[in-house]
Length: 247
Image (cartoon, rainbow, N blue to C red; front, side):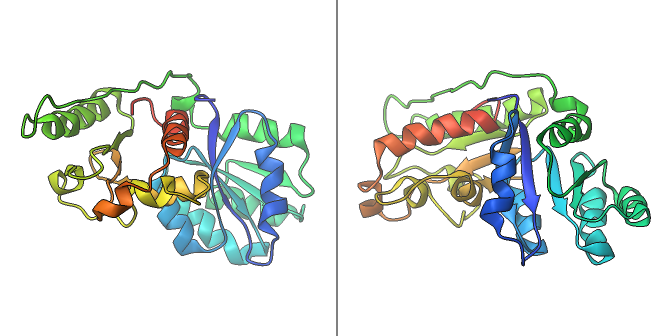
């Protein structure tokens, strides 16, 4: 599924999100990586996650500023407007604000498929195969973290795509320290016991750096490291493989 169009949904607060999102989850060639209903959450999702298309559910002209903001701040992302209205003036204003395509509600699967194909940026139409690269230190202080961090940066530079870096030194890893950052969440928060890992949880945990590297940090507390579920870690890497060319 590495060639799927990665979509972030912006729906109205009054919309029943699960039902609205189900249409997109069922669509072949689409991967929903975020679903939000307020502007701040949308901005945070676009900051932390690689997104190809924003689907904006429009409520008249009052939410066109959302479309305009996405188009202005992230011009590389395609935008699809969704509305129950077929008013020509609203459609024209939506297109001028930044919508590349328009889909009427109730959403028709074929109409949505065509809209996604046309709105998707050309740079992501080529499929890629995600690579997993493991850097293992032979002893403490051998420089494995330095190699891993610099390798991630260099891969992002060479490929011109964002890459993921996961700190699996669960007790003493210092990837976050190397980048001088403090991620809000760690691998223990998304792969711990009684946590059902999904795309929303993963997106929240990814700490997006300006160097086009997104990191998953180690736990802050030693006891949290012992609660990590190996099966969830395996799922984590499979999900990251759908989002990044190199992990």
